[in-house]
Amino acid sequence: MQFRDLKKQYEVLKPQMDAAIARVLATAQYIHGPQVEELEARLAAYVGRKHCISCGDGTSALQLSLMAWGIGPGDAVFVPDFTFFSTGEVASAIGATPVFYDVLPDTFNADARSLEQAILAVQREGKLRPAAVAAVDLFGLSADYDAILAVAEKYGLPVLEDAAQGFGGVYHGRRCCSFGNTSITSFYPSKPVGCYGDGGAVFTDDDDQAALLRSLSVHGKGSFKYDNVRIGMNSRLDSIQAAVLLVKMDAFEASELRDVNTVAGWYNEALSDLPLDLPVVPEGCLSSWAQYTVKLPEGRDRNTLQAAMKELGIPTMVFYPKPMHVQKAFGPESTVIPCPETEKLCERVLSLPLHPYMEREQVEAVAAALRRCL
Image (cartoon, rainbow, N blue to C red; front, top):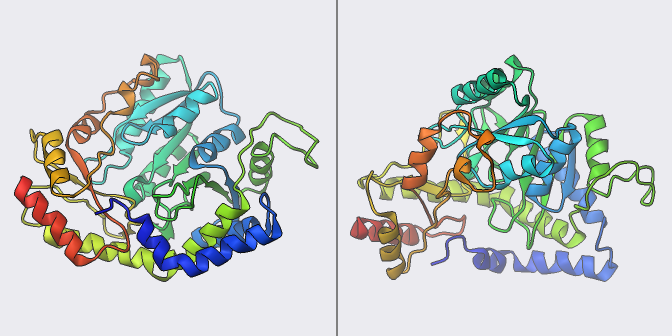
């Protein structure tokens, strides 16, 4: 069994995918080909944003967003403690300081109360200037933006929506990537919509920010390629990846988002009698299910359980085993408040195989293996 079966997806999409890639090869427009512009327009329309700026990967999308806001040394960027490393990494990469706040135990997403505590702690210390808030749409589920945006507005901070895993999710009638001053997503192959390599995108409704982001993503260019007016980076989505994503978007909109929610529903039924905390999708939300993550009973030896599942042919993953605030790469100034919920989650979470092409029998097999191992 595959954890996320990209081979099966390719088999289903092979005729359209091969034709799309062949068209790029035939024109030899590998960089800034027409597929890139078409994809950007389609993505912006899908999420409800005015501008989409594609780039090389999701991490670059995060960094470009902070660079466009002029964030740097002396600035604090508030980041959820339970997330992938890159959300905090990009702040450090441009000389700013990530400051971690806790998450909610049921949705795994940003806790607005903890965010405010972190902001106040930074203000009291007076060493850093509160500069921006990052909120993460983890595992396909949007953060609670009513609460997060209220706190950010109270303290005059821009919000960066990290929807690397959340593309396709919905929060109270709006799609992920439509929240915050700027939002980003990732097209890493295992994401809800993934390419055949790395890729990412930044979304904004601000014309000036969009122009600045486009400049920053191509060596800080000005009016033409060799007119460099600022220090930027080289982060572009190539034409082949754009062609792949156009095909993937067709499938995602037509069936994959619906089908992955069906599979998640099968899991909810099949695991309902087990001593597990199942994922929560709040009312008014739709998840795109980048992962299906359960919480094991307290004290359960996760390593032993994973080994037993592997023996039965069932792959599992742990996202994430370490809180951000204990990562060696970050200094002590990143920890201004405790994050107990994150610490508990890191000990208990376990992600199960999930993709739109799973069959009910496979879900039942995973459930049976878990029942046996527990």
